[in-house]
Image 1 (cartoon, helix red, strand yellow):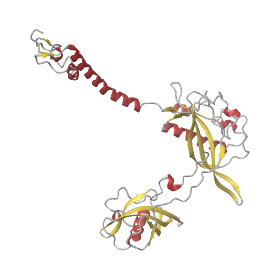
Image 2: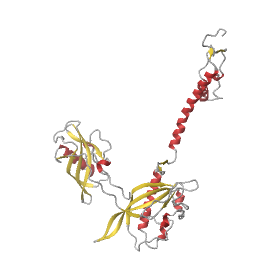
Image 3: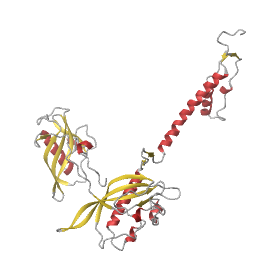
Amino acid sequence: MGGLDIGQEDRVLAPVESDPGYGFTPPGREGRGAVRARRFLAGPPHTGGVRWSTGAAHASRGLRVVVVAGLLCGPVSLGLVLYQSPTVISTARGARVFTPQPSEVAAVGEWAQSFVVAWLSTSAGGEESLRYYLPDVSTLTLPTVAQVVSNPAVADLAPVLVGGAAPATAAATPSTARSGATAASADPALARSGGVTPSATASSASSGARVWQVTVGVDVQEPGPQGNVVVRRYFAVPVAYIPAEQSRPAALRSLGLPGPVSAPTAGEEPETGYREGLPVTGSLGSSVQAFLSAYLTDQGDVTRLLSPQAVGITAVRPVAYTQVQLRTVKADRRDVDNGVPSDGERVAVLATATVTGLDAQTRSAQFALTLTARDGRWEISQTRSSPLGATSASDVGVASRAGS
């Protein structure tokens, strides 16, 4: 082949030329970042000698383009994940499950509470005041004397379906559950503030509507053998949430009247991690008594009773109790020495005490604490929000929720 070595038939001798891809461009005309990117895509400079064929050069340059494109896709994908709308997942049964936003959960819960309170505290003749919550109040029957209610709270809140008809509940009536019912006009005050308002055209069959089953607990005054008594009652309310659009804010609509449901069932007594009872007059009990007195009544300095590992433990302010008397101490270990403890020894306890309030009334209270030994005495190293071993559902025996 005229002087070419065997295996070099695909090479072509070419004179060395200055590569335009590596020419100098003044920074004023082209940014330094652009120059570096162009050089990266162009590949390494040619130093002379023998060049490979253009096919290999194009393949190398194409590989570099793919790498740069992959690096640029990362930020774009992250932005799509952060700003995506609530997820809607189709299940095997055809039902649609969505991931609600905190603002939607809060709005639905507040709406249900407000509706239950208005429904219970409205007497006959005031049906029109409930039109804000229901599209049709013509068939309502209300008592002559309204009930006195207080302390409403959401006991349970769960999505029922997406974009479908009203759920089948005992509270729903044909007049309120039928599709296509129109709502009352929006509250002007809420509309001005941009808050959630009733929709003028919303119905349970509206596209995109999400239906929630909300259980609301409320204290109701009822007549008793010796006068009025306060009873905690629970009511289930189906609520539709219609997401906001460009032409209107998010909207809410009750799909039926509140229906009475049973109260949540109390679970069985949980198993805790405290087994061994300790004397309240021993070294450990004395440290617990001193800490509770300083912690609740401001009698003494709390900091001198804390271990160096303790974080964020301060006396209760404002002071609400005048006296604390330790009654029982249970520990998570059986080998706790009632005498002088060894340095570094740790024990978790459940302390039961009687506290005396500013009104001179007494009541029982419990405190879950962790103590660590140092210099021959017990110090408080942690205060727990819940007793040891009572944090899992299997330990507590979770009760069924109201209305489920």
